[in-house]
Image (cartoon, rainbow, N blue to C red; front, side):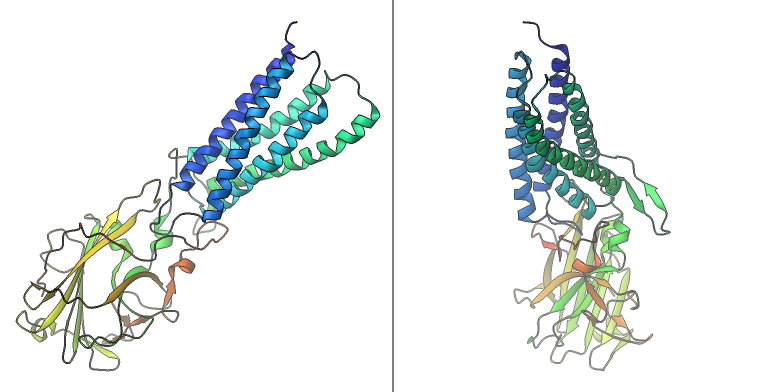
Length: 417
């Protein structure tokens, strides 16, 4: 018996569109599961990742069932029962396609400006699936034989569920396309991004990293360094110093005396030869507030009993796993004239954003030209989970909260004046 040409066309087009859509689903899962913590962006929740995997699995199972039913239908004298085909369609739409597109809307809303061919392909694949489902419904109606009124009444409920599902998919695909390709610039003008790469693409790093710093906190209870209360921080460098500099690294030094502690000297450079510090500020810690002094080179000579914490921050360039890259660091502690010591002060590092109302030009918050104090969480600093809200949905940042320790980074003692 000859194969109905209309059914053959429907089968081929349907399988092609579903194959394209299923491939996009698995590729998106592969990309999401491969995300790592970096600057601003990190992995999505485990729940979302598992959900993606489950719905991809359901979609794959329904895809296989579609192929089997399609092959049977090609050699059937008439179309398979409408209730069977519609039932499989309902399962496919509501247990695979709709959840997938809703998850993709969330991903797109939390990753605005992430332009990739893959994301656009998913939006197009969903749109094509909606249109082919509608087109096939009309095409099949031309060949399905007359059914009883009772059958039509029973089938209408399935068709309603299908129609609602297709509508959700249509709206979702439009939202995914819009969220990933249109954005408002600083002047509130709508701009369009064209695809740049197959996976995660272009991000506006300045939007997130401007006024963000790499900060240091000495733990309380240490007699060799002035006491720092919880939430007080020293800014070692701006994050953009590492991400935008030619060497893509920053070397910072925190030097201080003890018994008693009267000076703290913070210096940094992005130069690879380490011949001189580009930024240098010294504070007299015996006053309240601290006083900016210019005599640290004589107050803290190399022969004095001083401690220097030298840190090197290295920028890791962006990748599909870390769209804005990441920062690794290593450190060494020296006493006096570059004598390495095993007695390390206890400190922690972290990222934070200096509030727009606070001067962020110096390592400590400037109260005046000659005085300063530690930056303080909440009053002068904003946590990066809030400061780095991402996407048009304003999702909290899931990126790294601090540089990552990498002991392979080589540290050299610096003797800046």
